[in-house]
Image (cartoon, rainbow, N blue to C red; front, side):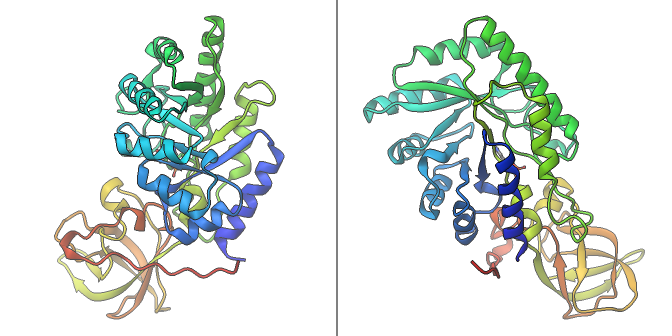
Length: 364
Ligand SMILES: *Cc1c(COP(=O)(O)O)cnc(C)c1O
């Protein structure tokens, strides 16, 4: 069985142990239509951050009722489209956004189902550019003004407040970070209830990380440990739905960026393997200093030390520095592993490079 199917089966099995847990795949990680269709066929929902993603999710067969839509800057067109297809939830991130959703829903004679995205001011042990739950980040509503925003939301006629949404960041491997989130949610729920305000259901966002160092030893993320952490630490009334928005952990290990070595170049103190792939296909190393394991698929010769770099005219167009890789030659095929999330999805045409082509191989 291919890795994506094995991963989805594993997650389905874990969700079977937690009947109140609902998964919404974070479409932004990889929006390849075939992958979306496969994930939709498992009955999971979709987590979208643009109107384009909502459309792709609907087209792939996700039930609109199981689509949630987050993002700090939803345009009127996107909101109208999402209302039109009847998505299950807007995760609203500001008071002006609530006002606009209310007006647009009224114009269609509809009621929007809304959760308020709370900025929990909980850090995550991950790269600064991929933490989202700190007070300094642009996401969500600061919890010190949350009660006012909830009261405002309750006053709106075409908005129905259904729950609270959180998301603290991405590539999180320390369960302590999720425990901190649970503690914050528990504290907020108690406070809101004490003031007679509804809590509704809880969406804890995504962010479970994968092992980029050892993709062969740990091809499937620790879903059991992840869900059990929430089971143990999140206080919700039995029967309250808890929503999860996993992206990376479902798809990242399932894809590799395959490149060819163009040149092996000797520098003064280092040796470069210059490949035909670049930050235009996989920007994570340049953007987040992310590590991806690299393998030479064409060589079994003893390892040498290389900086593996792309051809783009940016000094940050480097996949890895000083990595031991089987000796490289012009024409060798190189696999840059764990590129299934935030790889093709973030591709650009900078330097007028063509977009990467994707190939998949699985049996339905
Ligand atoms: C990006 C994002 C996710 C998914 O994050 P992963 O780290 O890929 O699991 C979930 N929810 C929201 C709101 C996001 O922005």
